[in-house]
Image 1 (cartoon, one colour):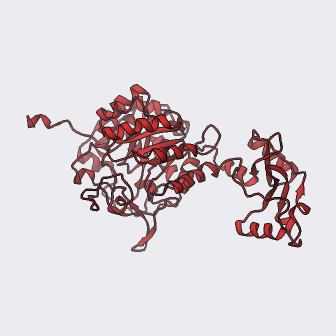
Image 2 (cartoon, rainbow, N blue to C red; image 1 turned 60 degrees about the vertical axis):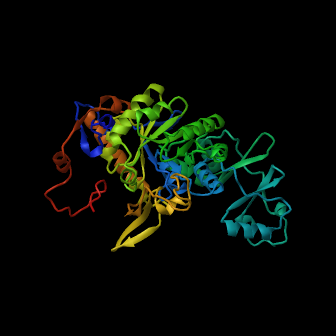
Image 3 (cartoon, rainbow, N blue to C red; image 1 turned 45 degrees about the horizontal axis):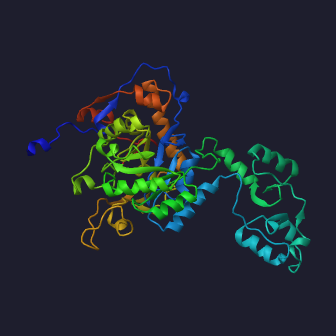
Length: 478
């Protein structure tokens, strides 16, 4: 009976295979990387930053969305702080700034002058209740007696816009009126928000950003498998994707809770992590996306501590066989070291990949910078490491206050701005798709074929018989 427990089929991961080149007429500059991360959320590139406390907070999530991807803000923080992080992303490139500092017409000029200095604000709307009366700027308060009320120095009859104003219309109004701020009002002249020239210029920098239906940056946020309250609050903050983040989502209690959470939020729900087709069968009838990977991450020790896992390409392919029948996107999470690994994950059915190690060393990651032997590194730790385990419920404690970690803590080389890394990863993926003859992600999933290689084949694939003197940006050599 015990021999039946042995599944002798080989489990395959990235270094075990190569993608076969095909006859192609596709050039890399003709390739479209648009994809779905969940049923209702589309991205411009198939890359998601991991929900780890040394990888994704608002700074990373903003940069990811601006570059066409998605950042999933980790949950190793208070609920209130996570909500603030989500708000930072949703409001960062919004045309209309809705949370503003305003003043009443009776406020003394001295108070407004001090407020402008402390908050670094160039102009403040003057309102009576909600009705816009004018704007007071630094120029208005300069040299004016501090006792004067704002109503005596404010600029009246300001140029305004309606809520449906486009970037181009707002720019024309500001250019013609020679103003840098455009209050947005409704039909009653109630103040709704403010458009600034800075907002417009920032948006024009990121024409390929991933945005929601209201033209704001997309963002994801992680929650525990039983955290209904956090899910509801994040949903109220217009989070695009809520990610149930646990080590083993093929757990009946987790699945029951995930179903209840899905019934109570309008945001797309992604559940993970899983690694088998059987697990997918239990999720695909209600989730909007699945996250695949148990043990492939560079800081994960699950496979050696628990002896559990599935080599990543086999896991992704098995889950995809089930998920595709239900139209559920698949995220390959972990084990990716090079852009070619992204191509391989997509070839076996993944719609997106989730990255931790490759992004942890970027300028935008929250990891602490450290210097080791004269070289800059950034802190990187697994969410199952001892330093994290007492702060989250991702892995269970065993024996009260004692933990059995399934991850380690370390450091990764500093890699500079995220945009540079994304450029190289997306460029490598496009090169792969050009070899295959695929002009988009769907064609890559359909056309790509993989060949098993030996260990010698893997050695041959890397630079060999040479001393590397200049490190390539897409091939780190340590």
